[in-house]
Image (cartoon, rainbow, N blue to C red; front, side, top):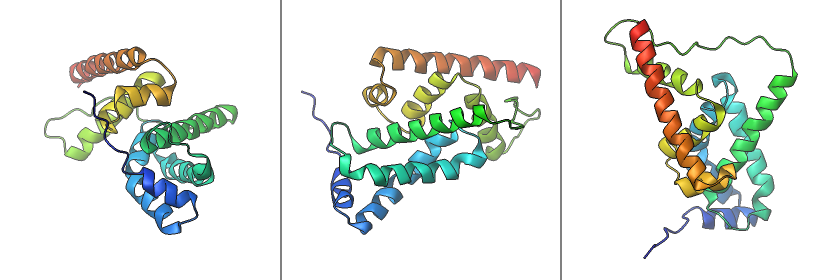
Length: 181
């Protein structure tokens, strides 16, 4: 028997939709870190705070229309995904010189956890967008494959394939970085 876990955020959304500002604040506090973590994999680091703020602006506007057809987290990540996509489209339209890390791991043993995290972030940033999105939503944000399939509007098998390919890409990139270092 498949017992579905209750959506603990749903009562907050219902109260927030009714105008309860304390519930709105609690909803944002409860989900902000996960949204920021997701967006950090989808956009340059300098844009993450602004994109997170834009996500929650859209969430607050959309609260009255939340029908509960999906979990609150699924709904939030779908909004964050649209914010990131809108940002990427806008960035592509305007000329901008941006320098991103090349994804190579710095040579030298005994790297700090910060350096390791930075290197891994660079490798994840190098994944194709669809693979990166599926990987981060399932492996970092902890969403189920079904929830990610709903967010990405694709079959579960496609999500599984994207995550598997992302893992393969990361292993290949890590080996290449170690050989270069």
